[in-house]
Length: 72
Picture 1: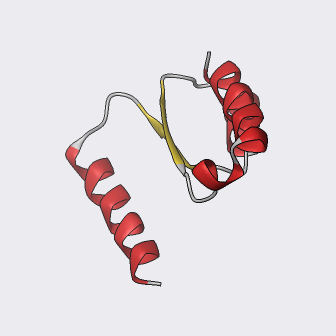
Picture 2: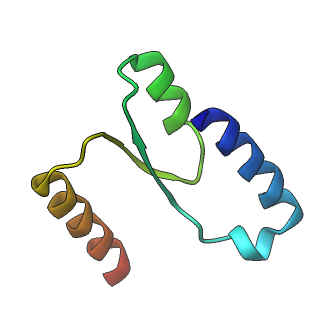
């Protein structure tokens, strides 16, 4: 399902480049297979792939990464 979503998003990016220019995706998944995760991470817009369920540490790490990018 995630790969379908990302494929659709890529098509929309081509049509609406200005709207999607700075969009980044945080993918939440239960996917365990490393080869499938690599396919997700291959998309340019993927900021990170995180496992469900989220825990407090994962959210804190993510927010730290997001704020580091925002400061640049």
